[in-house]
Image 1 (cartoon, rainbow over the protein chains, first blue to last red):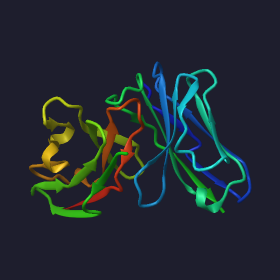
Image 2 (image 1 turned 135 degrees about the horizontal axis):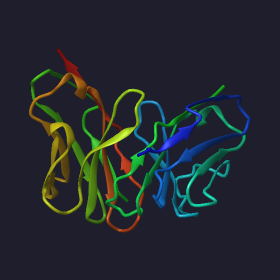
Image 3 (image 1 turned 180 degrees about the vertical axis):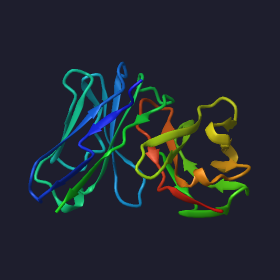
Image 4 (image 1 turned 135 degrees about the vertical axis):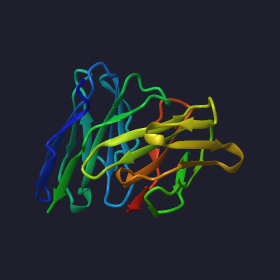
Length: 115
Length: 114
């Protein structure tokens, strides 16, 4: 079956612009996660959805970052007034129920470059 | 709060020799522990996971890891390296305290020399 997909695969934007990154999880997975991976680092947690609601958004770095999942499937990560420090690979993952031992399935990521 | 420390940023082995990637964890609760692999330009893939059952965990592609509570370690091993094993490996922890997100180590880059 289809895995987690993310679009676009690459995004180049100018400092100060607004961007949206999209994640399509595996069908039927109720839990969805966003992570950010900077060069040479492991992924860092941003936000976790259980269904339509954000169950944990403690990893969002500041109020320029926001994410939605209005129908409990596709999610969009939104970044306002982008800064060069936002450049990273943004990863999305989904799991069946969000249990702490559930396998999280990762998408290929969106590489964001802010110039 | 939970964390993981991967003791080596880069490991280089010859093809056919054993692989050892080291990981120590810190957790307030009984942890779930994972190893993920990331090949260039590919998504993260789960190699294996420990969730409080058997302490020796077998994963895909001949990898295994042993949970040692007394040493707070979860090292990844493979008896014989293959060229296709060259990748970035991440040790990951998740607390048993609830639906917490994964906490990744900084990664260990494995190089396999022919």
